[in-house]
Amino acid sequence: APGKLWGGRFAEGIDPLMQKYNASIYYDRAFYKQDLAGSIAWARANQNRGILSAEEFSKIKKGLKEVEKEWEDGTFKIVEEKDEDIHTANERRLSEIVGKEIGGKLHTGRSRNEQVATDMRLWLVQELLKVEEFLENNIKAMAMRAEIEIEVCMPGYTHLQRAQPIRWSHWLCSYAFAFGSDLERLREVIKRVNRSPLGLGALAGNPFGVDRDAMAKELGFEGLMMNSLNGVGDRDFATETMQWAAMLMGHISRISEDLIIYSTAEFGFLKLSDAYSTGSSLMPQKKNSDSLELLRGKSGRVMGQMMGLMVTTKGLPSTYNKDLQESVEPLLDCVKTTSDSIQILTGVISTLAINPDKMLAALTPDMLATDLADYLVRKGVPFRETHHISGQVVALAEQKNMPMDQLSHGDLQSVDKRLGSDFIFDYEKSVEMRTTKGGTSKSSVQEQIAVLKKMLTGQ
Ligand code: ARG
Image (cartoon, rainbow, N blue to C red):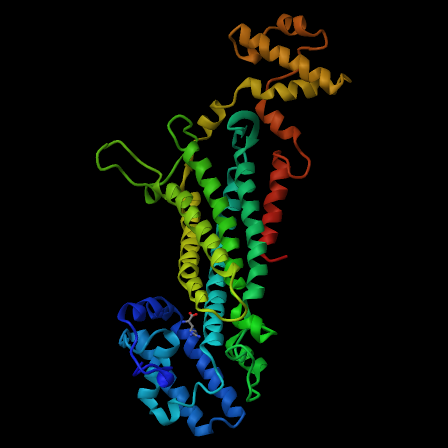
């Protein structure tokens, strides 16, 4: 393979399709910055061990900075036959700039196996820190809305059937807490991504005594991968990120589904802003909630990427195998999709308009059947009995084809003598009864909002 970085032992050229099949430069170029920073740290560590002279180091550093400038200006020219990945591309260009004599020393003791793991981890930490902020903003937006619209009541559902009255803010907080757990998990994931494999070699370690701690520190890592076989063959950091993303996207999918239902004309609880809706090419009246449908749809893609990588890695023998290159594209896409999705959801939530009248109108007296049973409990009747009595009241109302709260005192008395006229069908009152921690009363929801805000500070 003439011209290849690893061409020494090869007599013949590579098959043209194999060349393309093998190449990762068209996507791992996303790591150009991390790759160059890793090389500078690498060169410094080698200078400290006398592998490079001070002058060689400074020329290499300057050369690498030039390569960086070319990527940034968009003038870096990929040479297809030589640049199979970002590591070879950067080294090839460095040697053109500083000469083979010096450039050829950079890779001493180093393997692309440690390089790609280093690049991916560095890139991923930086991206996940941005994602963390987007997620915090999302929780903040939900908590703020919950605070402002705390007076609004709506039906709460189980099995998508009207169940009990709740506060709209309580519903908002329910998802904010799911995202709060996602935030806690993300902070955990970042800790493990943030470990440096640099200096582990191809698989066995470094023979020149490079200072791994110093390189890790220079690059901003918080710790080291502590076993070379493990460090070059590990993609758990990518898998864990995708598992995290898959669960988060599952939450995004569920809230989207709720919002799609609530925004139908049949429900009418809320309207999406124009900024997150699209129209129909045929039906002029349509306003579709495409943002929410895409959020729901993209969750499937992220879950698939997670599964794909787990299957790719599950049967690999130890250390580096080229299969691992297949972790890069899905990771890049997963992080972008997840990051965009969080931001879109934040936009949807902060710009939608609720219709409190419609929410209130969707409440029906039978949703207080449990409260009627509880009313009798307070008079000393066993719950199993009160449940039955209240059920008979529901049945009577159904039979008379009238709302439960329209039944006369006599009607109630005909079911059970203990049903007095002091039971009031009042949704607000029902909601305000639920004052225990985590309930839907105003004070409970306010407490939830306070807990959410505290989660944002990382406590
Ligand atoms: N581009 C490769 C990857 O993404 C790294 C190169 C390692 N290749 C090798 N033959 N050891 O995994």
